[in-house]
Image 1 (cartoon, rainbow, N blue to C red):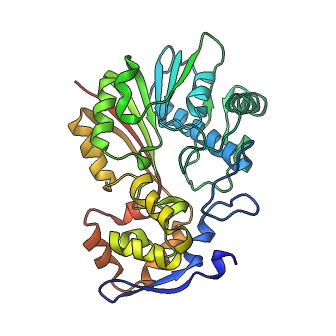
Image 2 (image 1 turned 90 degrees about the horizontal axis):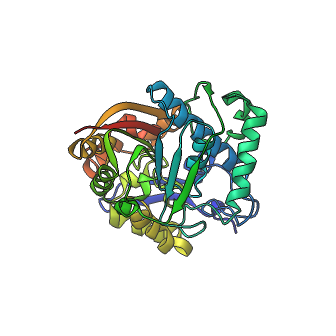
Image 3 (image 1 turned 30 degrees about the vertical axis):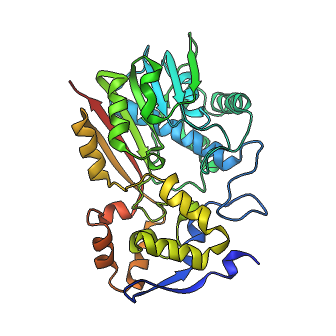
Length: 350
């Protein structure tokens, strides 16, 4: 029987407060999975799906738009993408800007991590996306030319038009390294990009490593999906309770997983406590961690999730909602809980 038909009712916290449990709090806000698969499963090995193509194009466009609005000229510069996944973002930035060199690092190959891309032909996907951009949006990235591929993306920030150039000597390479091991690259970069810090613990270590591969004036751009957002634990570990990950203690979370997701409780908890950064940090804490490691905030954009107007009504369904959240997570704020993606640009200073 499909799990969606089995999960319903209430969950009792250790103090006796009962929390509502329903798939209506979860499934309508997730992008679809492949036919015949469960919502917590990733795509099977094979060619990329349209929604994955749209996600890459949107990420590419958003970072180029952010850099353009920040007055950053990429001509002749170098870029490092930390937690690059399949490397599409740095390869495409390299292809559609004056960037001269790009490196992508990730400790996992395709299919090795719960959130990794499925095994696929990286070179074929790069050629496909590069040809698509050149043919459908010649001379400039225009959101309207690929918006039909982004229907399932949780975003509200539509990037402006970005002119691009192609050609010239280009250097890209992939290195199987973690975010804390950047010193092994033995080089420095003008721009760093990371969209995976939600999967990496020890944020102090990330910024220390980043400082070692940058110079004064280097820019560190971060796109982040906060743990404190509605779907913060991702589809793999989000509960069927509104903001359940903020309402449950760690022990209660394990008990909830065993009670309502028994057949995958172990995997669910493994991702929740190991596949996501732990302990949890808010965006205010991220900014402070960056500052004490020599990176000063230049740009901060809170991009609300597109369903914020619907999910905020769920707060009223939970008794003492705010007092429970503040007891468990005193630093959590309402704007972060209703966020979709954050976009940051930090400048390294002496």
